[in-house]
Image (cartoon, rainbow, N blue to C red; front, side, top):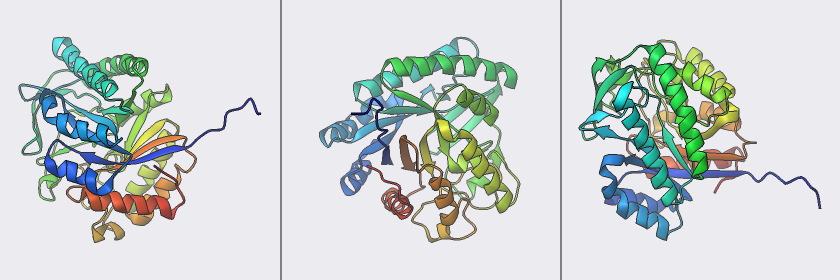
Length: 315
């Protein structure tokens, strides 16, 4: 018997869920191997039913970190007490993931601004700038390295997600994204630097593309493709979605089941998505989640078809 272990490829296709009955319906229809919970820490009790369902049906529960204090978004790059309390919300989410035998927690970089969050409306509203980009980038980087070590000690992969350069006046809205607002997002170079020292990355294709705003389709996709190659070795999670014009640095979260996905309005469109996914054929561990506006089940099925069409095996 060889002393070398055979690398077993584990790719899981999951579905995004929240905390209501419709989310459980998605799980009943698709019966995925994993799910990513849009987990709002201060509303943790609301997620008990869906987590109980996942445990009963052997669905791996993974967690997308969201947290706020009296409506002010947690900010792991903030100086002082607020920043430390924000870091604790990530720790708490890691602990909950561990208790639920999850695989990962995904989270965002901090911001130079303090921002209000309204999950019902789907909006972030800037309040005030709290520190410079250099100060917040340094703080976030130091804290991220400690958080990733903590997650490893708990058997959870902490994964840092690419985010858009700008936010929209309303999430997942054709009209809302036409007016972009600055909420102090840290530059993608912070993610590049952390990936270079071994931090796991979530590449949200449309978020990544949003870091090269105000260019044409070909130029934007070229940026996305090369950034995906750059981050490839540290990418453990993919979020699938697409943009539509204008490519202005705000996201859109197009449904993969929508016919526009096969047109050149979508970025990445279906052919471009296949080209991106093909880069991951030899990955030994990867989670994949579609993040559509509405049609989660249809987008899950379309993602499944895309993976099968290029020969990527998944659970």
